[in-house]
Length: 290
Image (cartoon, rainbow, N blue to C red; front, side, top):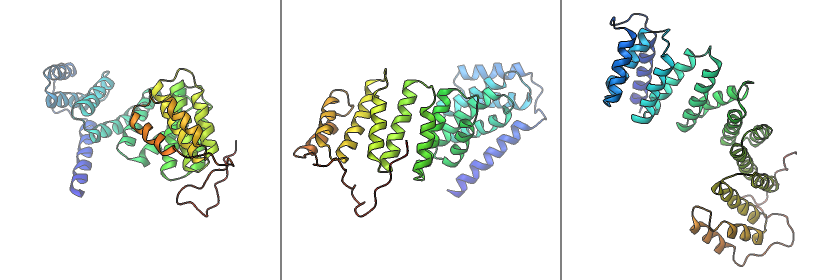
């Protein structure tokens, strides 16, 4: 494993050195490399295409088509080779190269943050999300995504208060309905993990008030709401919610199992919730301030 990591680091350094080298290996014109690269792409010769694209970047530090060439290389790495590590190396280099172009820098940072998240480089992803969330020129959709991802990074460390604060910022934005639904759902998860069932229920009910959501998004929220109500000793309300999504929830067998588990359960005389398994004897967590 150490040797593999070492080889990856060495390859990244060699790639960076190659791209920053000011001395061309050949005297081909820039257009020739791009024509050869395009031909290689048409012939599905990935190796040659990468070679010509990289040679163009090395020989043309101020080339007008550098952005397009980087996009081609990223497409090859992600879609053909499925090599996330190389794609990450490309994006890190691009982040430096296009640092003077705010719009492209934001696009690169967003792609890199998502890739780092998928590769479980959570520390690097958190740095990128933080910089994006602090960018005053970032659009509402992208900023909402940054706040949501920030919240999930806090949740991984069981830091519930800053996670909820990030999601509150997300919900103050004028983003689209699906992005807002994402933030409400993440807030409901945060409060559920924090054992604040009432706040979790409120977030889910607010989510379900959003107009224009696809049925699968609604049914997922209803399913989670039914779980919250069951934990609040309200099995009858939980059962009614489950029955309402029998035809829309992706896995009807799960609904059947849950309904079977609710049979015979009766709502408690008091609406106070029972302690979750493993939490007996602990003081309940205070509710989040509105």
